[in-house]
Image (cartoon, rainbow, N blue to C red):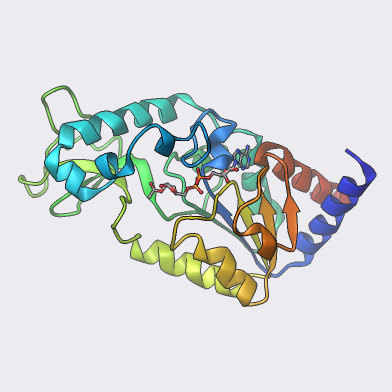
Length: 260
Ligand code: OAD
């Protein structure tokens, strides 16, 4: 690492160690190095598929098999990948820092698999199902529910007996889960440092969180190899993959504070 980059990471590590609270927002870029495709890059999902045919309620009501096929493909893909050094570094930061909140737009469960114990999932989790009618939730190991779609066999809700089960993810036009967005909002408002990591910061309301933090006086750090609409607002832009930048932050903290 060059001297200037070393100095940038050292200064950031100092800030993070002395901050009363730190809030992180992650997006699809954090999981890219694990093999999960992003959405808006040249090779991203929304350049190959149409969100309105796959990720909204009308599409599900019109053609539940098609929506289930797509989510079954994504669920299979996500079940085969593992956390990368970026996820692991975020789990380590939870341990190293005084007050640390991890908010994610990702549905792939990789933050938990990496060891993060407190993850605010704004867009749901692909491992869970919920009933489209009664909203009952079903975890992957729930013996009452058929969790997977099989050809010609749509999973039904064992609670209400009439609704169809669907992945517990947020679709376009749907509200974000109330408790999660409230918590993310209040953490963004009161944190001293906000890190926006691997997100195009283009989808609201999540994209508002770094702006809220900055407006409330937080020091804003962006980690993304590319520039985004957020970059001009950032105090520091680390133009590196998150699997490089986040472990470098952890290492800089450990160098400053060898007790950790
Ligand atoms: P996007 O696909 O919009 O943005 C991914 C970002 O990750 C881009 O800005 C890339 O430059 C960056 N990136 C790529 N590789 C990276 C790496 N190795 N390290 C760090 N950054 C990297 O994905 P999101 O911003 O997460 O919502 O998209 C937000 C929401 O849009 C998703 O949660 C999803 C989608 O529609 C729903 O489905 C509701």
